Length: 432
Ligand SMILES: [Zn+2]
Ligand SMILES: [Zn+2]
Image 1 (tube, rainbow, N blue to C red):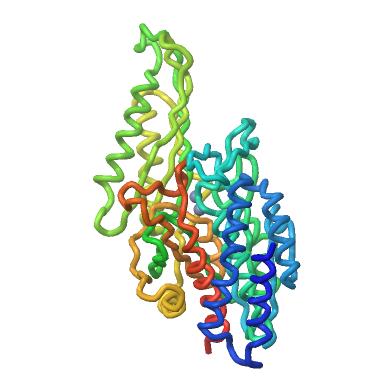
Image 2: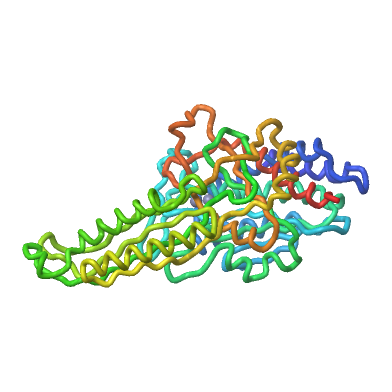
C-alpha cells in the first residue's frame, strides 16, 4: 500500500511541478516511467495469473477501464466486443496519436513455475483448455497502463490527444466468431476522435531492452489454408477399388513444398507454406472418403501472395483430378503484411533512442509471424516495434519463444517499453 501511495505522489508531483506550457522533458518522462514501474510489474503479475482467451477478456478489460477512469481518461468499453478505448485530451490542441496493446491469452498450459503462474482454464471451441499469457500480452496491457499513468501526470502539457487501444482476440477468435483489430476498427476505435497515427509494441525473447523494427513490410501476411478432398471409400486391403487418400495427402504436401522452394524467386522475397493439420480415417483397414488438411501461408508481398494462392489451388485441384478425387484449397482469414510507414519509421528512431540509447535496430529481420496490428496500419500511418525481454540468465539460443509454455520475460524491460510508448506518442504530437 505504501509503495502505491508513494508512486502516485511522485507522478502527481511531476505533473504539478512542470513548467506551464512546456513539452514534458526527457528527464520527466524517465522519472515518471521509473516511478510507475512497480505498478506495471504488479499489473502484469495480476493479469498473468488471470489470463483470458480472445473475446473473453472480461476481467482484464474491467481492470483496464477502472484504472483508466481513475487516471481521468474518457473511457469507451465493449469496443470490438471486450475492447477498451481510453482517450486523454491534452491541455493544448493538436493531433491524435494512438497506442495499442492486445489483451488475449492462449490455450497453453503454463510450465514457467512462476509464483504467479496461471492455473486458469476456459472453454474454447467446445473444449476445456488451459490458458496462459504465452505471447506476453499481459505485459503489453501492463506497460500501456504504465504509459497511461505517465501521460495522465503530464496531461496539461500534452499538445493534442492520446488514444489507448486495448484490443481483444489478437491471436484470432474461435471458430464462428469475429474479433480483434477488425472489430475494433468497425466499432470506430480509429474514428472518434480521428486518429492520425498509431504505434504498437510486442515483447519477445530478444536481447533485453532492445527495440527492433524495420520500415515497410515487417511481419508477414497470413492466410489460413483449408484443403478438402472427396474420394471413394474402400477396404484397406483393396486400395485400387477406391481412392487412396494417404497418397493424395502426401502428394499435396510434396507439391506445396516444391512450389515454395522451386517455383518462386526465393531471393526476391521470403514466403512460407505450411500444412499443420491432416485429418482422415477411423480404422487401419478402411481407406476413408474424406480428407481435410489445414495450414498457413505467409508472404511479404501481394504479388507473391496472389501467385502462391493460384499455384497451390491449381496443384491441389490437379492432384485430385489425377486420383479421380475432388480436391479444393480455400484461403481464408487473411491478415495483411504489418506495414511500417517509411517516413514515420525514419522519424520514430530518435524517440526510441531516447527510451533505449544505443539499443535501437531499425533494420530488424523480417518476421514470418503475423499481427492483426496490420489492420490499423492499413488505415493510418503506423509503426510496430519489438521489445526484447529475455532474462539475463537465459541463453539466446535456447530462450523459449512466444507461445511456448515456458515463455517468460525480464520485468525490468517494462520501464523501457513505457518510455518508448510515451516518447513515441509525445514526440508525434509535438512534431511540426
Ligand atoms: Zn502470439
Ligand atoms: Zn502476440
